[in-house]
Every structure is written in structure tokens, then in C-alpha cells.
Amino acid sequence: MRKQIVAGNWKMNNDLDASKSLVKKITKKLKKKSLKDTRVIVAPTFVSLQKVAYKAKGTKVEVAAQNMHQAKSGAFTGEISAEMLKSVGVNIVILGHSERREYFGETDVILAEKVNAALENKLEVIFCFGEVLEDRKSEKHFSVVESQIKNGLFHLEASAWDNIILAYEPVWAIGTGETASPEQAQEMHAFIRKIVADKYNQEVANNVSILYGGSVKPSNAKEIFSKEDVDGGLIGGAALNADDFIELVKSF
Ligand code: 13P
Image (cartoon, rainbow, N blue to C red; front, side):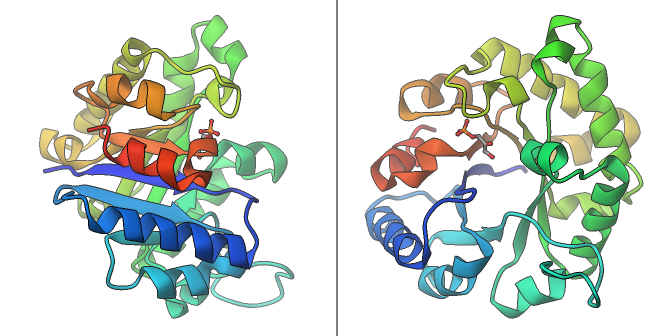
């Protein structure tokens, strides 16, 4: 059965010292909580990954990368491969974040290749997608989300879905303070689960965790996470503060 997950995407924030200090605070605070069923993930920048993974080892906190390149190795200046992530103790990677799609030209085709490379290297993938405001205003949000999921993931075998986590992040809600209402999130998550069930089967659909992302904070998390098809959150801003992040983890 699917797991509840709270994942913090630190984006381009926190140098090495700040990253170490934040993960230390989070692991310390989590020790006291009983969270048997909730997975807690943090995603620092590449330069902090190794140290954060080292500090998180043996704790409740898992560590994810924010991106990776699809090739195994070679002349790709500035890039990091799946194997390299594994070599520093990272087992999860975020792919398809709207900031990668928008600012770094990551297309569905590139993302499908990245998904394959990650899975081949036994990395779990947090696959992000979501519509921009224009799409929602013109009622294209369902078709946009469907095509992002289809193009990025529907080439996979059903068994590969054991290592896929979905993250619905409406672009208009990211970093804007504006959140999808719990009803809007539930409506989209139910739609996502249905298209996965139609493509594969009900078991695959029931087992995949679907996270919501976009201005989730302690004040609104409880209501969003209480929705049937919302299995947790991918958190930006509020994940940079240990107390807020722990509040979010406790919101289930
Ligand atoms: P905010 O929580 O800052 O809106 O960011 C969400 C996000 O993009 C997580 O990946």
C-alpha cells in the first residue's frame, strides 16, 4: 500500500554548513516522534548531498537529489549522473520539476530518458508535473497533466512503478503563497490515480504515492493531506525551516 511522504526540496538554498545544520536539526527533532508510516525526504543541492546523506544515515531522513543527467558519463560539462548520485549514498532523485522544465528546457523526451537512467541505476524517482495558470484558466489542466505523465512515465512496465512517486505541483501555486484548495488537489490526484489505473491496473494506481506541492505550509497542510488521494507533500519554502518542516511531517 502507498506510503505517506513529506519531502523537502531545498532548491538553490543553503550552503554546505547551512545544509548540515538543517539536516541535523531535522533528524534530532524527528527522533522523538513516532512516525512509523511517514517517509521523510530532503533534497539539498549537489554540493551538500554527500555530507547530508552521511549525516542522515541511520536516521528517519532519506536524501534525494534535485536533478541528474540522463547519460552514464562523458562530455557533459557541469552535469551529474545517476551512478554518481548512488556513489554518495543517494537513492532518490527529483525529476521534471517545473523550474527544470521552464528554466532549463527539460522536455518530456529528456525527462523520459532521465527516468529510465534513474531506474536503471536503482534510484527512486519523484516525478513532478503540473499546469501553469493559463492552462487552468482555459480548463486544460487535466489534459496538460495527463500528457506530462503519459510522455514521462507511461512507457514503463508496471513493475517499475514500485520506484515512482508522483508530485503534482501546479506551477501557479509554487512559491506564490497561493495554494490549490484541498478540493482542487483531491480532484487532480483522483484524476491522476484514474489514468494510472486505466493505463496499468488498480493495484499500481493504489500503490503509487501522489504528493501535492505548491505553497504547502504548517497552516494548510493538515487539510490538504487529509484528502483521500493526497499522500503527502513536496515542500519548497517551508522545508527550509526545521520547525515548519517537522510540523508538516506531523500534519498527517
Ligand atoms: P513552495 O512550497 O515554495 O511553493 O515550492 C514548492 C515546490 O516547488 C517544491 O518542489
